[in-house]
Image: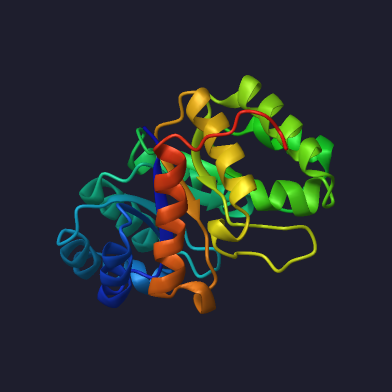
Length: 237
């Protein structure tokens, strides 16, 4: 069964807030300076019964020590996936896989047109589907039904490559990275289709810092629990 996750910097307060809200999984924002503290991160993370995914740093400098620390942290936390942006995968993917051939690298879609989106899905070994990026940038805020059609086609063709999902509560014209419960129709429709295609890893309500309050996190969990208990519409509204 897929698991709803939140995303945060790996500091104890963030773990505790997510745990209090009812989350059972988390994705970490990471940078080279954070990976230099991978022993500390492991100690804190081991205090919580979470599933984990790791986001590879988005910015330089990246050293071989950074790569080694990323692989080590992945092993220690038994991460479900390592999310990585395409430019970083192109530069460092080969070396990461030399360090650990079993690493589940999941390349994320960003500002892609529709042809580029297909190329991203075809050419990469593992994928992070960011539903918000697909809707906002690839489909240019197209009608909701169009988004669902594209997600369905994507899952039919590439669900075997899908390692990770970003699913904020995006609404056309809004800012990015808002809680999943801000658009429950989007959340439930996508969760249902992921479950129907056998996805069992993490679906992340990817929030900017201003939304990472206990109240918003609790509402995200409540929406997910409602969906899991049977509120799973299968028709587009």
